[in-house]
Length: 127
Image (cartoon, rainbow, N blue to C red; front, side):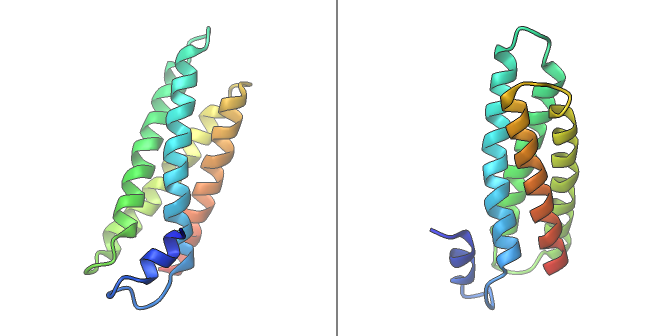
């Protein structure tokens, strides 16, 4: 199932916004991957508290962004824009933190965060 398709099927949508649909999809993925990275951080022998905190903050922001951005009833462009901007900031911060570590889970998390930030920026341009 495509996020963009379900968004476009909404009676109030007025067509598909592919960029926003992709941002929602990747924000959902990023939330899951950041949560997994934080959990892996807790199993590392070294102190990974800051990385875990950053990942969990990013996961929560990504999940909230996806939930707000997928809503098609009514209009709240100001809030959607603010959420997308916050998601970009959280993802960039998380990617920077994960880049400080040589763990595979951190590398994958940073990669997903950069992808999510890129897609949220594209969605901002498409609003």
